Amino acid sequence: MDNIVNKIFEERNHERKEGSGFIIFSLKDHYNYWIVINRYELKSVLEEQINLFLEAKEIIGDAQFDKNANLLILNKVNSIDTVNKDHLLQIEEDLFHFKKNIIYYTEGELDKLKHVLDPSNIAASIESMLLQDIVFEQHKTRFDVNEYQSLLYRIAHKIPFLKINITQLNNLDSLEEINQKAIRESKLNDLLQNDFFSITDEELTTLTDDFILQKLKTTQS
Image (cartoon, rainbow, N blue to C red):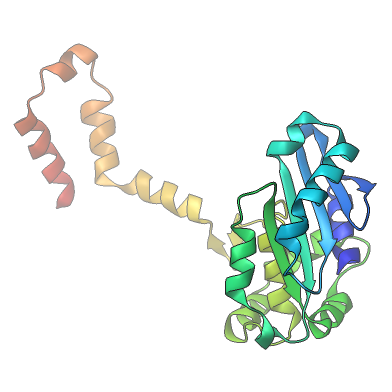
């Protein structure tokens, strides 16, 4: 898993630095820092985070690190059934030192994912697959059953700079386009444009509450 995650950061122009048992990825123009670690056991993560923080900060040498430090924990598990979601949430919601994200996965999920990724461009490969109906349907109907589809979504949720192009999907307009169209076709929009936005400030002050209310009622017919 670490090879996949490392490639994602590198492909998206993050500078890589090595620490003691961890890797730091930084996007300095945005003062954004990610410390990536592998842990089979999560019990000690909160206890060891102060040492991780101090060592990583020394390596980075940037005062902005304090407010922009992310800890990405890759957590290999034996079985999806053994994942303690409450414990994961407890760690991720801890407020000290890092913003925390955990990607849990099984060996089976990882093996299947490796077979469908394009090794020459892993980030784009993930983004492309997330747009496919069959991938989403498998994730939705067979969530967390040791298939790679749910692992794809876990990765995308925890690495927020992975982009998904939602301009058009399955020949449907995007949500933004739908909203804009609804606004353009709305009677209220016409009313505002013709009876309110087009008049002067002086004219606007002469309008009574009753007149405005009656005008608004005409949009409901």
